[in-house]
Structures are given as structure tokens and as C-alpha cells.
Length: 291
Image 1 (cartoon, rainbow, N blue to C red):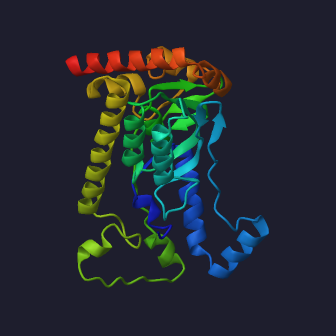
Image 2: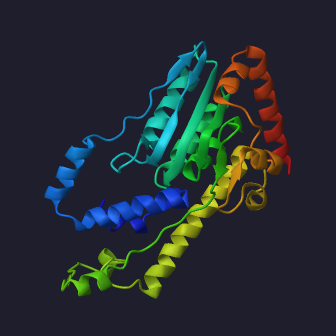
């Protein structure tokens, strides 16, 4: 994807991380390929970050979810389809008694997030799937975490940043200052909607807003399903973009408590704890369906 156009994609990502990524992308897009290649060689950034491999701790599978989340084909540290495949494999493996997902992610693209979340939600029907913010879990990563059987945050961690955003980069002012004029030729105006070489039109702004709103509704519905609450309660409990400390999130009822990764793995290493969690989960789901 052209990095100048990345701002118009739908993101469920912490705003600070997203701003840094988009700013970097815009600057890089202005540089010649030769300079970009030289910079990459000097920085050693020749390859994309490799996602962390699952780790077995007895019958518990530890599945790290780290960095920017993306569908395969777009730049990211962890791909959604990889998460979904690994969760499904662990759910089907009789040797795995529980899945623990330590999460260290600012979120990422909306594309692919719902599918990965569905895989996590489906897996928890067969065995506990426990998420722990270690130490931060924002936006799309939060979407995934809320689909598990339980959700914790390490002592110094932060969670939240619920919501979806998009945007538009108007490069016309910059181009005019350097004497550059871009002419786009397309089969239809729809093929060049929201292009970066002119101000955003009201029509294109409206369409982007509709996409953001629809994705945010899906985000809230996923949290409501995963946490066993009404969709109308999501904003009050989980916020509409703010982040919360572990203690604040626990007080709000957004997560199940403050625990380190080590503590979570130890807690769910016993069959009794796993059975207790599954029973509580089933009871909560029955209550939610009865509301």
C-alpha cells in the first residue's frame, strides 16, 4: 500500500503509535528509493520483525501477540491470520490444556481483526484462552483480548484505546510550494476518491466517517460478546478512546484483575483452575443471553 494513502485505511490503534507510523510513512514517501534503501542498510532494517513463536509451559501454550497487527501483505509485526491459525491449532490439540496470550501491542489495522477475534472466541468454548496485557494492550489488540475467557493486565500496564479512526493527507499545499502538479486519470471518480493531491471533499469525508462508524459498531459488539455485557455498556466500562491503568481498568470492570504473565501462567496450570474458569464463563454467557 502507498504510505501516503495509509492514513485513509481503517485503524484500531493507539493514537500516539499511529501518529508516529503515519508521520514516518509520509516522510519516507517523499524520499527517492535510493535513499530509502541506503537508510535501511545502515539501520539494519532489511527484514520485517518476526512474530514471537508459541512457548509450551507444561500443558499451557503461551502465544505472544506483539507489535503492530495487520493482515498478511501489509507491514506489521504480527499477522491476524497467524494468530487465528495458531489459536485454532492449540484449541484442537488435546495436549494443550490452556492458551495464554501475553499481549504487547498498540493495535493495528481493522482489516482481519474480526476474523482473528472470532477464532479466539470459538477456541474458548473448548479450553480457557486467557489474555494478559504485558504491559500494554490497545485498540485492535484489545479487541482480541476481550474475546478470550479472561483478561488481565500486569501491574504497571495499560489497556484501552477502544475505537476506530481513519484520515486523509492533503499534499496539495506541499506540492504547490515545490512546483509540483499531480494529474490523476481514472476510469471513474470512485477510483481516485480521497486522493492526497487535493483537499478532502465532503462526499469522501462522509463515506470515510460511515466506514469508521460501522467498524466501531463491530468493535463494540465484539467486546460486548466477549465480556458478556450489553453493547450499550461498552462505552461506559471500556471507554471510547481513553487508556486505563491496570488498577483503573479493574475498577471499571473492563478486565478481570491485575496479574503478571508469570502469575497468569501459574494460575491456569492446574486443571481445577481451568475448570472453574470454564464454568464461570458458561454461567456468564447464560446470564448475558438471558438479558
